[in-house]
Length: 103
Image: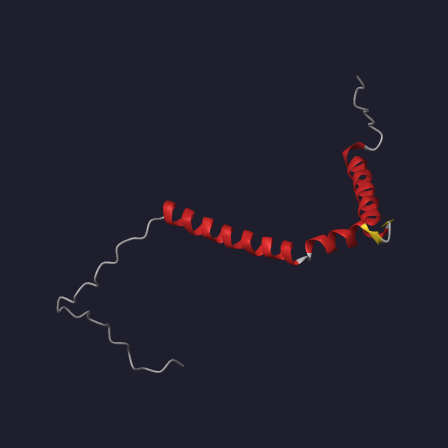
């Protein structure tokens, strides 16, 4: 069994930079290296934009919104709306502001 390689020369930041460079090359390979007549990105876009896939996305969105509504109804049941209170007849006394103009 191979032990993980520890290299303290670059530290954690160097390791993250190296992983970022590798990820960038993988992304560039996905987008620009042809696999037959098309790149992997073009193959993926061709698959995802078929009518069946678009219908599946719409149905998934509808199912997700129904699930969200059901969860919200379960967690926060609707409250009964009470009739508004009738005023009792007392009127608030409003303070009278001075009519002097400010300088």
